[in-house]
Each structure stands twice: as structure tokens, then as C-alpha cells.
Image 1 (cartoon, rainbow, N blue to C red):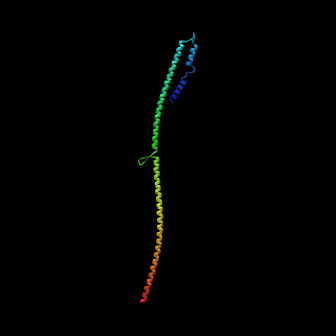
Image 2 (image 1 turned 45 degrees about the vertical axis):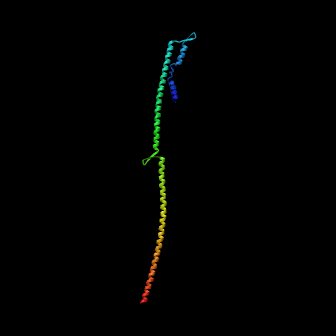
Image 3 (image 1 turned 180 degrees about the vertical axis):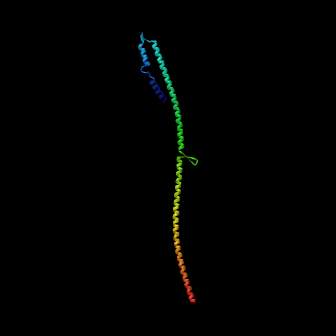
Length: 192
């Protein structure tokens, strides 16, 4: 990644710093020097002023390129430092996210820290036990109500039978009382 970035920056810098159209390039200057030089026994005689100018131009261009390379290296170093800083921040943010996710997944109940799944299980278990207790209470209440209704019905029947028995007993007592009185009256009439 760093090599690709360095190559890209170097190529961009080279294209950006290319000579302006009015200025001749180093290659063009060399070609001009070769064409303008004289031939002497198979050798080229070069004008020292032109050669010195070409040397200065080449040296200046090399210095410019070295400065560009140094600048690119500094830019790369600063970007690498920035990337390292951003990576450290990213790791820190990931840790914070993990911490917040863990805190979000926990619920404090009675001073205990429970995960949401445990909390839900506990709460639904309590609700289930309460519903079961309510159902048991309702069943027992209905049984008690049935027994109470049956006992009331039996009591009403027994009271009815008792009232009937009392009425019969009273009637019998009255009849016996009359018979006794009739017998007493007969005895009194016979004794007189």
C-alpha cells in the first residue's frame, strides 16, 4: 500500500513539475547540443558554454527532483503518522463501542448486573409462576365455591326437612295434646 502510494505521488509530482511548453527539456537540450556540435575525426566537438549550461540545467533538474522526492517522503511520513493516529483512534473507538454494547446489553436489578437475556428469562419465569399460582387459586376457589354451593343446597334441604319434621312434630304434639285433653275431659265426665 505504501509503495503504491509513493509511486502514485512520485508520478503525480513528476507530471506536475514537467517543464512548461516554452522551455526545452533536458533531452531536447542534449539533442540540440549534439546537432550544434562540430565533427572532428569521428568525434564531436562540443561548445563548453553549451555543455556547462546543459550541466547546470541537469543539476538544477536533479536538485528539483530530489527536493520533490524529499517533499513526497515528508508527505508520506506525515500521512503514515496520520494513518497510525487514525488507526489508534479506530482501535479506541472499537473498544468504546464494545464497552457500550456490553453496557447496553446489561440491566441492573437489585444491585446485580444481568444480561438482557437473563433478565428476560427471570422476568418471564416470575410471570409464569404468578400465572400458575393464579390458575391454582382460581381452580381452588371454584372447587371451594362448588363445595360451598353444595353445602348450602344440602343445608337448605336439611332445613326444609327439619321444618317439615318440626311441623309434623308440632302437629303430632297438638294432636296428642288434644287426645290427652279429650281423654282428661272424658275422665272428668265419667268421674262426675
